[in-house]
Length: 140
Image 1: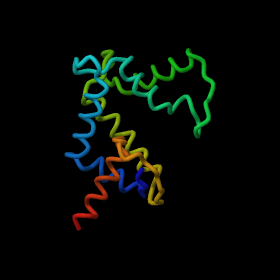
Image 2: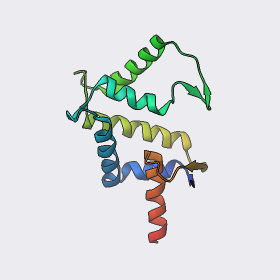
Image 3: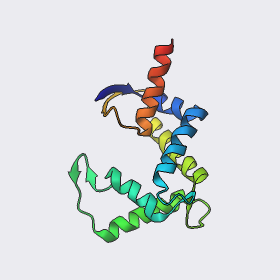
């Protein structure tokens, strides 16, 4: 378990580090592309969001939602990612939307540092942002 302190600049610096961010997005995309066809289907993207349980819980407490409500929500998320409306999400669309999400997180954090406990094996984009910042501090 690692405890990190981050703020919006930690996340923003990671997103603007083209090499690190592209590498992370490429790995994330490849991990989600279960059938290796080079695009994400509606079900592949949904599985990713389901595994995060961001929608079904609120501060760790399960929230009751009907299957229809969840399907509608996941469909609306997919539509945001599928910018060209061709029914799949390619690597570029995925990267662009993840960039927007990460910059929104950075804006939400602002300049107020927060402390987060992250599993050492966690390879979330937030953890990678913290690791990039830590590597800069150790290099200095």
